[in-house]
Image 1 (cartoon, rainbow, N blue to C red):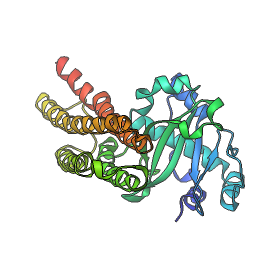
Image 2 (image 1 turned 180 degrees about the horizontal axis):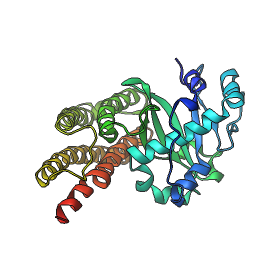
Image 3 (image 1 turned 180 degrees about the vertical axis):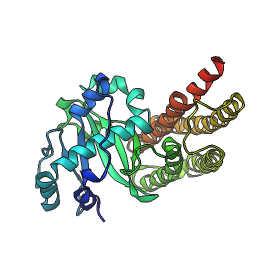
Image 4 (image 1 turned 135 degrees about the vertical axis):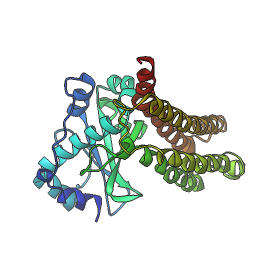
Length: 298
């Protein structure tokens, strides 16, 4: 089923309505300005829908999107709140990028796509851009990160960490695909950065998933023993170290590409680095820091 057909079929009454911390001005501001980006299924392009559920980009909307806007307004509003809820519960992207979001008047765009591992899960990519630049320089929007949305289960297993790790494979495949058309001199990097990053991804995924297999899928920490606290802390730090090594290699590749005037490809590498760093921030904010604090308070 296509994404547009799936969205049309969503019945909000079948799910728990999301709860959002709207007393937080960052979250309430994003909610008022969040735009949806949905794919055009018959050709390249996208439908951009503003917070008033009106089309922003010019051109013919198409029968499916017109039907969604007309008959599924409640579904779209529900979906917007579910996207926000999942980003808050299962990522740190809003906190990590609060400066850019606030500088752009809280305007955030959520691009909805399928997660390659499961038909039941959406992958949401978030961007920010100012209102004045929205129509004129849309391609210059700032990527702030992604998260995953399962309508049935707001709290993802492992807080979504397994999905972030799995998605590294998808992202290295995307880089390889883009390198065919976006790199002017692909051979220069095939035996170095592209190969080294792939090997690091394979190692990071394998070792990180092995670490997660040693942890409960709900990483609650309030009632665990000191010994268990230390065990989890060491495991999660180990995972962070693999991700840091990967982020450093990606960052070095990004710098080389920019020095070589390979900007058309460098922007995809920048997005990849952003996702890895967001995962590191998420580990630090919601798992490693609380465990460290628990030990210090004994």
